[in-house]
Image 1 (cartoon, rainbow, N blue to C red):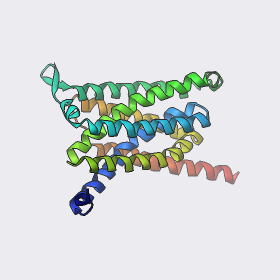
Image 2 (cartoon, rainbow, N blue to C red):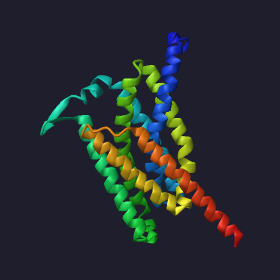
Image 3 (cartoon, rainbow, N blue to C red):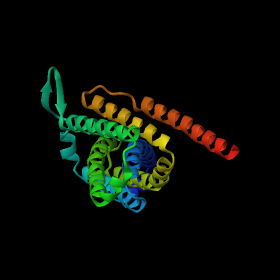
Image 4 (cartoon, rainbow, N blue to C red):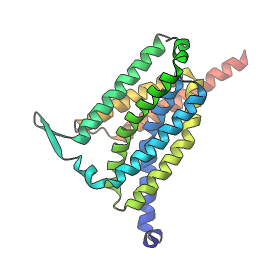
Length: 240
């Protein structure tokens, strides 16, 4: 352990991997912010805490099962001339789940789904939210940890990077969720991001990699435009 603390290469690997894990965690934060927006604030806060705690637990457990995890990339199924592994199948399933969930939520927003009936089933809704968070946490954790294995060789560095990234995700999830809840147009934008992320996961599963830089640039650009839109709307209200 002391050798790691005094090794510049270890610190460089930790910094690089932490940044990468934070970037990969953006997907998780966006999903959490959207999924908890339909339950009461007190339950939403608890759901975010449970979701991020589970994300951390899943990532650490997967890191401790490196040998088994690496085996997930071995071909188990052939589709035409393409070999698919357990990792590919999980990414495809998770991507399709994200696309279906985001499309369902978009339909609900467009149709102005009644929130009163949703509040009447708050307990059931809370459990359903947690179940969805668990599914998405597993998918994002798998993608994140396989990336970590490719970036670093020391388990301590990987665990440290994951813990730091999850802590930053926890600190940012509350403000992001409140902003999404307060500005309905940003929720529609976040749902569109989830469809985009779902498509990228399905493409990865079929071994067609879409560079994440393109996706995150599109998200960042759209988010900046939406911030200006929110500010313009606020200024119009104040000018009345």
